Length: 150
Image 1 (cartoon, rainbow, N blue to C red):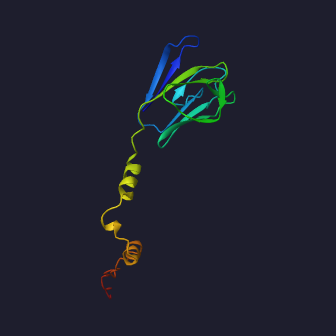
Image 2: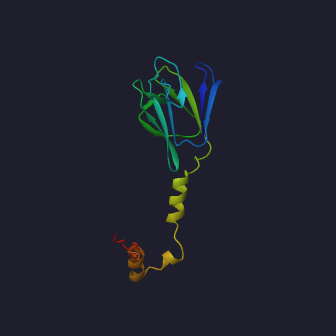
């Protein structure tokens, strides 16, 4: 789970909060297609992207005016819980809280399940590996009804 909190420009007071439980990408910017929309002249239409890259969240600057962490311009940076980022040098401040990774999608759950070795997989003889990798299915001829002579 990742939570973004918009902070007051001059005081550490929260103004608005967004929490994302299932997203693996959270976009911040001025355009209405972002997850977090901030109306500020210094914020780009697509300014910041937070991406979950197992096992961490990363922040990626997409904005023309830059994204700052501890008053240093960043391009890509690992998200630390409680980090405060500023969009542009004089733009809005966001505090980022990371409490847990997002849940796996059903497809990733299936891939993990398929990748787990089983007792049968642990047999590593060449014959077993070849047989496992080159499974042959018997092809049965299709049953076609006899043609009718008219």
